[in-house]
Length: 289
Image 1 (tube, helix red, strand yellow):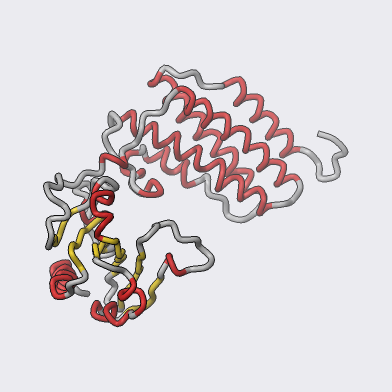
Image 2 (spheres, helix red, strand yellow):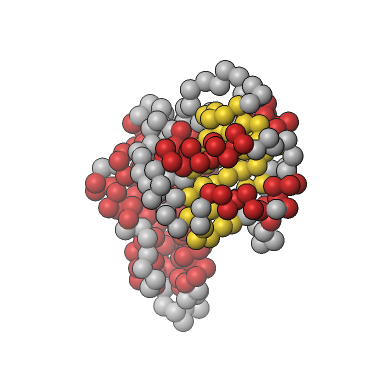
């Protein structure tokens, strides 16, 4: 596997020799001093270029970076509408295990791009497009203190959607139930846990994409309970995950509410939980609830 020094030298040597590339910046986890280093980290590289067309029309230049296992060009895909505006990216996994996520950016967008990500580091700047860039920081990704309204909405959404899960399980529509558990209830649970961690750390850190650093900030018992909220694919396991998720949400939200002086809707929680238990016990041929 090529080392970081070898990868950086390869990219920068290419950029120095190509007059279309006026600056090179590095983004992502490799610029974040709070992220542990490992060999799975991507190289998030941006080329700030004079024009885009020649790069996109002829891909010979990409082969300079090694033999690829697979490549994705998000802005050229029909299934996923592009969202980078005038930019174009190449996500590339190489046979030696290295991965480069390389984005082409028109140089005229340099001033705008500088404001987008405080984790950016300048590796090469031929025309002083990025003067006086401050040291990289992940402050933009720190957990944000919730307002009372956000806290209320999170609680309401969590318990409201739980009734959809129960309905789906009674109807034997397990995919419907799992979808609501995973895609609607879980984000509210994760948000509440995120706020709990934020309180413990004075809202001065990031828990990482998809909460990947949460474990280091959670008690072992609470972490195990979180893992138990992932169902195994049977109706019984989804019911169990639903109630475990409710217990964990309640436990966490009560602590968050106490610390932030927000009122947790315990009465609503208890009524909904009783309703869920009632639906769980309801015979499949019941004529009414």
